[in-house]
Length: 380
Ligand code: UT7
Image 1 (spheres, helix red, strand yellow):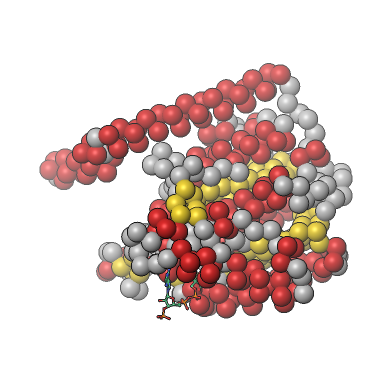
Image 2 (tube, rainbow, N blue to C red):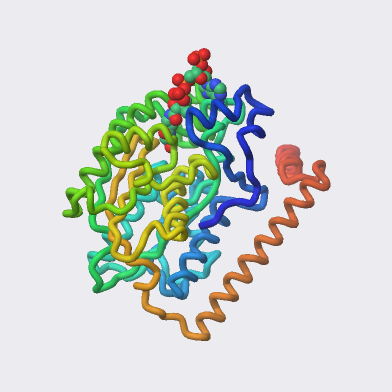
């Protein structure tokens, strides 16, 4: 996993919108979130998480066949963030694409990758959930800006004769409720007419009808977990831990009540990261594993829900990093180190650039871009 260093607390937010720490904690459970610096992006966070996953599996990047990056905050419409990550980590033999299913994206991506492995088409896949939600938030909207944060998580999937892995996945979409949550983009059909606003919403900024999404989430969460367990052929009581999308503690508590589970069955870290959309499940998964909440052989359930509206539930049997064959020779380890060093250098360059922007705001990137645009207009 990878999260930005910069922490933004609820009190920080209360300095620019009318809200309080007490309100945010009581209504959501969120206390703080991480916010990307100017030198960080969906790609840099995703690549950092991907390299960490490869290191944990002791696998060289050249052995990855497929990279799927679930994100709603891609750096560009194209190239895909997955392609940028592929180049950054040196996965020279991999195909790469982004997957757009909002906060359900990680579970969707997991299913796509695991099915590609099961059919025999590929051996190894990196599944990444990466977001810089801070870049698409309307920071004047207290209904959304208090909820989200930035981060990335990644898992490495590999063909194995061992039983386990992704046992089931149920993917659903309710496009009729698309209007409740979205980010208008360049392809929006009204764009030329309204420029800045699409159906009253701001271009490139998130809007949400919180109450409708809340109702949707509480409707699908417990049912999704039950269905995924049935499809996997396991009883609910066989599930060791549920790793839900980290949107709101009240939603998770409601699901626990509906399933008759103790709240501790649901892993949460939203108090520290907020809602990181497609990154939230892998971020929680990594921390749950680190804390020893998941052991080899355990059944773990994932449930994601969000824009689309979409939801996705999955049950996996954890095989853990130990199941991945140790494939890196000394030469490959050296190459991997080189890729990491090159990536660190690029990060350093970006950090230096952003430092310059801070020291000389008049020479900032935006200003430079504006001046360049002005020059082009003058030429025209
Ligand atoms: O990953 C995508 C999935 N997204 C979600 O799962 C989000 C689901 N929805 C939610 O989590 C909740 O609906 C919110 C946390 C967004 C809002 O909580 P709520 O309990 O549904 O609040 P509300 O929208 O019903 O608003 C209650 C009151 C309103 O004031 P009045 O009209 O009762 O006077 C709001 O204006 O709270 C007010 N309010 C706030 N007050 C202080 C709304 N946002 C804030 C705020 N601080 N940040």
